[in-house]
Amino acid sequence: MTAERQNDLAVAQEIERKFLVGSDRWRDSADAGRRLRQAYLAETDRAVIRVRIEEGGRAFLTLKSAAAVVVRDEFEYSVPLADAEALLRLRHGSVLEKTRFLVRHAGRVWEVDLYSGDNAGLVIAEIELEAEAAEVDFPPWLGREVTGEARYYASRLALAPFPLWPEAEQRGAGS
Image (cartoon, rainbow, N blue to C red; front, side):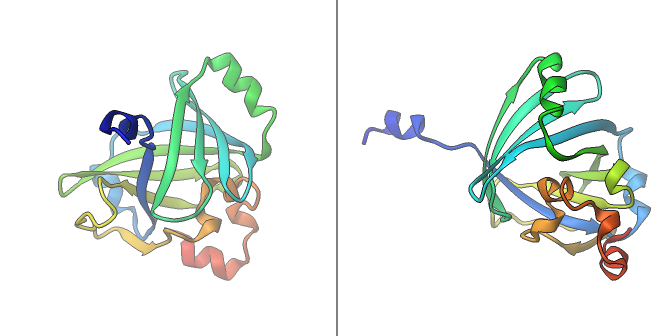
């Protein structure tokens, strides 16, 4: 296979780790945040399809491999806002509402999602990495890692919102 053909077959990948947030100290370094609404249109054992609308009117359709692991295939496409609003009505589960804050720490940017609506009370931090084995200096406000725990993935939160979890599980996840 030629190098050119290999490049044509390259797959977009997301390398991401997820953590619960252990304290509000992240707010000291956070930007103003932006509100997001997103919903899931389909989920199989192999892939999920999401529509997201960002504050300011930008909208995206995203396809991701379904496995709850560090490295996942991800394809994202801009869509017209009107189309995204119509797609929200085709969802399964609830519309996820959150404010995403960008937080700088040790030369990296963390995304802290403060959920509202059906998932109020849940705060998750994510970091996208250039390689699975990348070195990361963890901020002191992080809680335990939940990468690979499917219930913390947004597609699952749309079907089983955080406030419906048993109380003991909620206490372990709160900030």
